Image 1 (tube, rainbow, N blue to C red):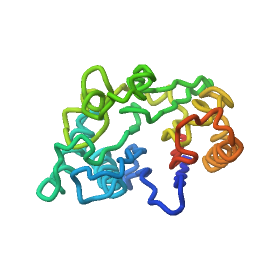
Image 2 (image 1 turned 180 degrees about the vertical axis):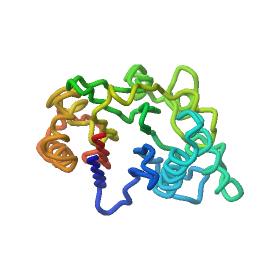
Image 3 (image 1 turned 30 degrees about the vertical axis):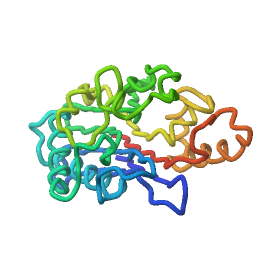
Amino acid sequence: MRTELVSEPGDPARPNEDFAAVALPASGQGGALVVLDGVTPPRSAYGCRHSVAWFSSRLGGALLEISVSARDLTSAEVLSQAISRTAASHAQTCDLSHPRTPQATVALARWSDESVEYLVLSDATLLLTAPDGRVTTVLDDRLSRIPRSALTSVEFTDTTLRNREGGFFTAAADPSVASRAVTGVLPRSSVHALAALTDGATRWVEAFREGDWADCLTVVRKEGARALVQRVRALEAADTERAHLGRGKRHDDATVGYVEL
């Protein structure tokens, strides 16, 4: 089995708010890949004494542990329990009802001898490769379905679109959001490899249009996860007119997790 994890901050002076981990239990009975992208809050107070990086590492660690220790749970149930556990760890000190309480996007995959189970919440991306080379892309496209005019409108606030019907959902403090995730189960024999990416890495496809998802996975498979991030960084640096990035960050935290089963 081949595994790779690469996570690079968008700004070396700021903490990396992404999280990535892979578990291969000693029992040899399956494993799990977890990738999170912490949602950077505005500079104003957001009701929590903890950083987004703290939240991502807490939620990511809980997701990984529950994924491999509670095989009887579905992936949505795993996420629900991980959110509950993380919320409980700071409910006494922080206002978890605040719409900007720390939160993250989630990509989760876990496998056994019989199946591969997956979950995606918000704009993380999961790519699954079949033995014949076909690539299946798992996306939660709610955010992309929101008109850009709505996202840039002066009336836009977190309370109008974030974690609400008609908007999009992230993993914050409400465990019920797990039911909103995109989930599925495939036979183990139908999946040769998988990759989970945060939107800082998927810019290669989504912002710069350097290739499709199959091309993206080919770069990771042939050149390595770090090569994809390096390609993104080069494209970001070259986009001096912001023809591709628009109003987005010049550099974002970029994370790639790759597993060949």
